[in-house]
Image (tube, rainbow, N blue to C red; front, side):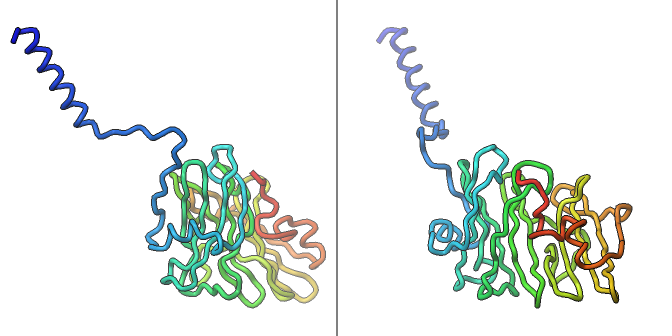
Length: 248
């Protein structure tokens, strides 16, 4: 065998070995995005695929890529606590999920329930509003944002159980609660408490630090007004939670 032939054979062998060591694979054109679990729930993939388990579906750009995503809540009442209700956002890049379930969640009341999609934190796509708990006349909503490729619940500084990181809205004659977007940025968390002929209205402004809302006490407001005037002049009391926030 000539020297040239020997060198060619050695080169072919080296190329063959290099190809065998290359484990990278290009996805097939048109292949569906990978679906990796976002929670620790063993039933996540099953709930994602089971359309009969869904409680409400919304469409909007949550991931911030300019394309509408499918947002839905799916319920499995027989699952372990923490995995009985999951929130899903399905996009072209895959599906993200977050647990909506705690020990006190009462699935028999129709909760959790999707309330809407609004631009609350002024960044990325729309944020997901979900009613998670209910009192005698007050509902409590959580807000979920798409951050770092997954769903994350907005946290409220210094909030305490049983309504930790939840926004109260609604109420009765004695007290009303509301939440909305502040005109110059941030979130307004407000209460109106009956005092003889008028209501004392306290409005507290919270500002975002990534996904945490921190109270800015300099912006606190307190005033007194008649009940019928409250929804006319204070937009957070005029509709569902965050109804005065931009749609996107």
